[in-house]
Structure formats: structure tokens, C-alpha cells
Image 1 (cartoon, rainbow, N blue to C red):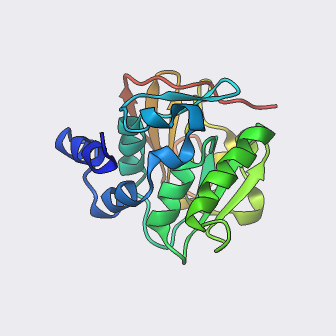
Image 2 (image 1 turned 60 degrees about the vertical axis):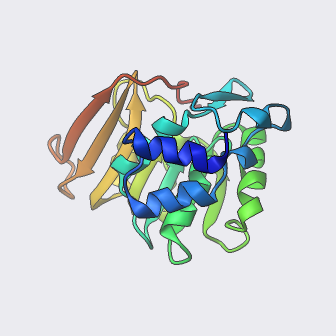
Image 3 (image 1 turned 45 degrees about the vertical axis):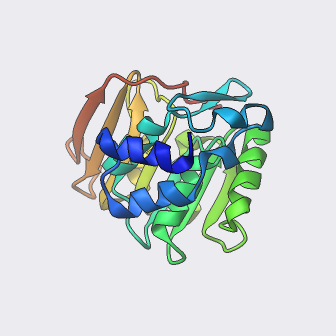
Amino acid sequence: MSNMNLVDSLIKEGWLKTPRIIKAFEKIKRIDFLPDEINDLAEMNEALPIGLGQTISQPLTVAFMLEKLEPKEGDRILDIGSGSGWTSALLAEIVGPKGKIVAIEIIQDLAEFGKKNVSKYSFVEKGIVEFICGDGCKGHKKEAPYDRILCSAAACKTIPSEWEKQLKVGGKIVTPIDSSIWVFKKKLSSEKNNNFEKTEYPGFAFVPLVNK
């Protein structure tokens, strides 16, 4: 299956809808983010192992999460659990040269793998994507506040407080919790229990979020 066939199927099945996100999927090829021994499986609409107990997410799941995240040109985005670097590169293509993606991965070897993959598109060299090896649960204060926060691994029962603090008012967090994808939209700047609108989308599967 060619990359265009995969993208076309995601559009026909209703997972991809937004033109800027569709263009990113067309340009940023999943095969560039896989270990060589499984690159023939790149166009399969399934999660695939990338080593160290981690996976590259199923394309339909990535499409769904990016559609819910609604990234815009020029956005500053925190990408937690960046893994293979595929979501980081997709986001970089969407936000463009005026945006910034901070990609956090706690596993050193995986962070290096992701950075190498994203560099194939020159996003690291251009300063659009910055890789951090660290605990994603703590976010990254240096580049905060963020317009969007995306996490690609399942948090326990709720979002970390640091993510809440590092998100702009009006910003969004899209993250798995258990087997659901949750969307959190920040309404208030104060530290109150009701400062987020929350929406749950059940029926997904993720590797757990690794933290220290």
C-alpha cells in the first residue's frame, strides 16, 4: 500500500478531515520512522513495535488525536512520549517555520532514534523541533506556555498538574487515559477544579506513559 493509499483510506473512513493535517500526512511518511527490519509494514493501519517496549501508533489513532488537537500554523506544542518522532514531524509540518514543537521522550535511545528520524525532514536543523530526554509528566517549563499539548502514551487516571500549568488559556491537551482519548480545553487561568472542559472518546489502546 502506498502512502497515498493509506491517507486516502483515512480520509474515506472519516479519520482525516482538516486540509492542513491531510497535507502533513501526505508529506511525512511513516516509513521514515520505523526500524529498517519492519519498514515494509509502514502502510499498515496498525500499531507497530519500534523497540524498547514501545510502539508507533496506529495511523487512524494519530489522525484522530491530531484532528482533536486542532494544531494551527505558528503554534507552540509540547509532544510528550515522542517515540519514533512521527507525531513530532507531523506537528512540525502543520505549525510551520513560525511554530515550535518540543518533543519529550524519557527513553534515551528512543529520543535519539526519534531525533534522527525527524532530522530527515530538516525540522531539527531549522529549529522547529527540539528534542528533550526527560520525564514528560513534568512537561517542559522553559518553552511554556503552550498552545497545545499532545501525549501519545496512556496516563494513569488524570493529567499531570504541570501540564495544566504549562498550557495557555484556550489551549488543548489531547491524551490517552486508560483506554480512552481525552480532550481537555483550558477555560480559566486560575488553579480551580473546573478550569477545563473535558471530553472522553473511548475504545483505544496505548502503551503506558513511562515516568521516573
